[in-house]
Image 1 (tube, rainbow, N blue to C red):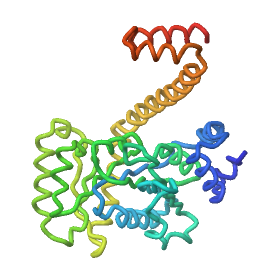
Image 2 (cartoon, rainbow, N blue to C red; image 1 turned 60 degrees about the horizontal axis):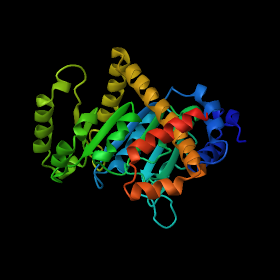
Image 3 (tube, rainbow, N blue to C red; image 1 turned 90 degrees about the vertical axis):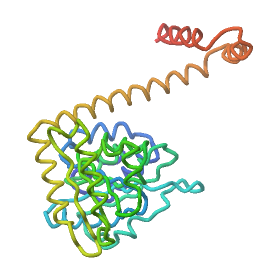
Image 4 (cartoon, rainbow, N blue to C red; image 1 turned 135 degrees about the vertical axis):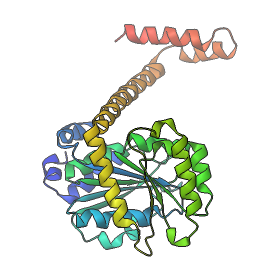
Length: 315
């Protein structure tokens, strides 16, 4: 069993081993997570989503620098498309951010989506817990791309950045996909390309029309350029302002409670599903029952209720 005490003391190798075990759904995963859970809940989790090519990785790199200058230990979970052959992440985020490789207070991990419909790997939230217990006070989750399935970022992050670029036309798709509903901050990256006025105006008009943003936090629109080093410090300031606002208003605490409720039910559902499948495969007459349903001699609705009742009686 990997030692949680070493993880809490900041042992980088132990953190890497535990994350690998979690990704592979290895034996002892649940026990490890149970042991480290009391040492979590202190990190500010920042989610970064946006279309491919929006410069999310470059922006992540700049935010790492800002966090380190503020004295924070930083963890990065870069969720990449998965190789269909190896099952591993295709993109090398450590190469993108290699200047941080020798910094003992920066931990960067690429994770493959492994066939998940959304842009987030299934093990992401558990890996965030590991980095939290490891001592990272800033954890950045960089996702594959934006889309309807990417809405799950809001269930992981305390602050969500939606990254767009001028002239790409992707901001219209973002509006249609409803992604604006998850944004705490809009980032117009690559502003050095010019023509940012239209996209900023479009977003501001959307915010004006949305009842959700008439009170409380209104997502700021921040223009950034990594090449020209413009807007990066402002973005970091806005991120911290959002954390301060949600903490003072109680919104952060409420979001955490909702997140925990959802996680609890997901774990219950996963365990129950596994038990039901096991019971299903071990039940006698299953093949005959499927045959009867195929012949329309019975229906799956009635049989499902019978199956569940029998399962519960035998518990």
